[in-house]
Length: 286
Image (spheres, helix red, strand yellow):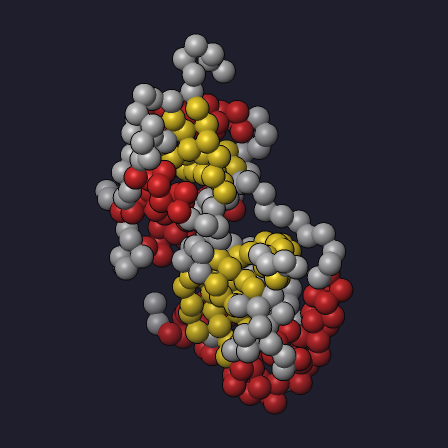
């Protein structure tokens, strides 16, 4: 795809975002040509509270979480942001430091409009500044208002201990139960390989087909109420991707060997990921 085609494709995407919808096609294409692609892995901070503003971000795929520093340390989560979210305009307009931290809770793809390009656009289209001012007011009014949270829509089942046998059974039962509460899909390595080709699940961050894989998973999540991921027994690229795509990890075990499994250890070491232990008792099925 040529640079012109990409600019028109991104311009069409921007046209579907309420913030940019009032601009004509020429302005949208101009914006698209000045946006820089940014990829963030789950856990990466896109914006840190207190840092100077470097530009405005638009989220193409993935999920971001907005938080502010809490009294006594730690962070207070404000809300999650999905595809089409606009981030960072407050610092551009107010010339102040970043007012919140924005962290990727999925592998995410964004576009960045730097401050210099922003100023050039304002000179060409003063209406853009007025539109941003309206959005700024809306954001300031909404800071302390309860925001919708994405909830635990993506759940990863991880083998706990050294016996991976129970994880598949728990994933199957979980997906079946969630089906009664909305559209649900269970994804494991085999499902990915069937859709995208052999070894597609092993595409790591540097693989040229990684964007195709994460884009497909993002579409699956947006098209379903719940997604259940099942990792491998080992700490593979697919296992790591499952953890990076999840709201919560269920550590599923029940065997006699309770030593930490390799994927279980990685899940517990991922500080932004909530982990829950699920044990199977043969004498008390349920």
